[in-house]
Every structure is written in C-alpha cells, then in structure tokens.
Length: 139
Image (cartoon, rainbow, N blue to C red; front, side, top):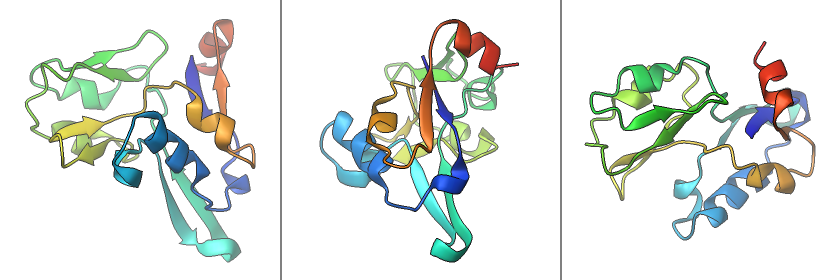
C-alpha cells in the first residue's frame, strides 16, 4: 500500500489528515503526526501537504548510519526504532521535509503509508494505491 497526494489544490488546511494520523498512533496530539500542512498564503494562495512520497531510493535511508530506516518494496521506509540512535541525519536528507522529529522519543516520525489519513481527508487530497497500482504509480 502507498499513500499518494492526489491533488494539493484541493487542500483547505483543515488538518483532518494530521489529526487522523496522530490519533492512529495514540496520544501526543499533532506532534505525533507524520503529516504536516503548511499555509502558502491561506485560502487565497493555498496550503502545502508534506508527507512521505515513498521514494524508490530514499535519501533518508541512505544517510542512516545504523540502517534503522529499512526501504519498503513499495517505496519509502519503515523505521526499526531499536536500531535508531537519534542522530537526526534522516531529517536533513529528506528533500521535501517529510521526516518529522519526535522530541519525546528522540526518533524520526515517518509516514508508514497505512492510508488512515486518506479516509479522513474530506477534500480528496490524499489517496491510497495498492498492489499493481503501486508499481504503475512509481513510473
């Protein structure tokens, strides 16, 4: 399964995706969300959704000195928290800024592409592809 940003033009900044993500993984409020929504000028100019785009060759994994970020076959990474030493190199390596930092655990917070957030996006900004669609979407 792979999470996709379908249409950023539809984002109204409601943060429903952020709340859903944070709620999915327990307490901690929006600080526990793997998605961020930033204003690029509010309702007049729009919003920017920042979430892992499932790179085929993720730079965040390439800079990890302990191989704590395992590349997923569908693209993107999975965090092996036991291997993570909290160096933060992954944050700087992500070209779109999709690696969030959890100050409480001193570990990265990265989208796992579960698709939970897409179910709560009322404007169709986010969507999920599965199976063969993942390979086709990567082209």
